[in-house]
View 1: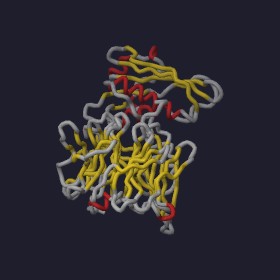
View 2 (view 1 turned 45 degrees about the vertical axis):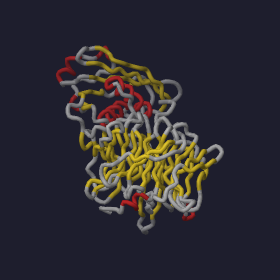
View 3 (view 1 turned 30 degrees about the horizontal axis):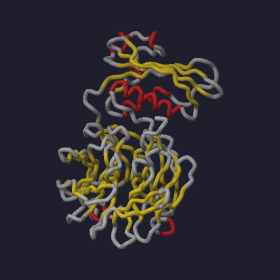
View 4 (view 1 turned 120 degrees about the vertical axis):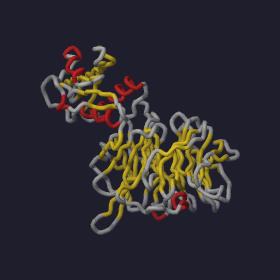
Length: 437
């Protein structure tokens, strides 16, 4: 589908996608990084004590996280001149000779019943001093998550920005079996693509996954029994409930920042409009009333307004309306097609889908100066979602006719691909920071 009808995309993208649970991780490939990325070495962590060694290489996970950000150039293990495990064992001349500016060393020892204690230190090679270091208890089950949290600490220490490695992504997968039958599944994986878990599977389409602000629930659209309905499901327990099943369209759920309400698209009164559903009492109130198509709502981080896509001006464009109700105002004027907007975590910009010629790409709109920049160069890029620290945008794209995920930094300098060997992937949503983060 090289040039989809704009209104086909606008009308919630109701495609008959299919999929199955996948045990294999999404595969990250950095296609473009930052020129002059910060050189860093992450030495394989030492193991002290008897018993079974950890099931994962903690240092390799940390190094992969840092490399994936595009902000760091991680030294290959084969090029290391020495392999110290503590700061006192470090000969800074070894690392200066390799052009390293920072160094991570660490060791792991048994801790409690089946647990581990990880001690790591981040060093400034040029100054020969420690920048930070912690001892972190963990278990075999939580080892990868602990490695991601350590990478977050290192990232924040060196960049001044909060890391987002210990977060998750939700997405829809699709696979067709040998008999030509399609199935669909909603998956959740770590931000690096590992630990993929199936949240729900169906022979009918699933779409529009959206994380709750506490990261514990997902809202999504399911076409069970041939009709669209919106469900809210707990990620940990699998408990779910149907929250919207009106006649016509039930689509594009978006959580309010306080987690108490969903903005959604309904056509129960004949025309697609934006509504706000208060989950506790199921109170529903219309936010727009217009003869045009209004869809794809997204809340501002402060909860005071909602942006949405509408063709009321003749073609799909982004509008903003107070969350309490009021007059909508148009935000996008550059280009004939702008849709699927979502706020950056700081509320200063919008990621959206914009048409460039015949192609659909991810754009970034600065809400202060209203400048719209184009970040990607695909032919069918869609469904943008910000990392919770605002540094990256994950989105869906097509490569050789297959749906996959990709990510781009907000400055457009870092590009990544997230592919899988079988089937398609689409509609990503990046989780928020959680309380444990």
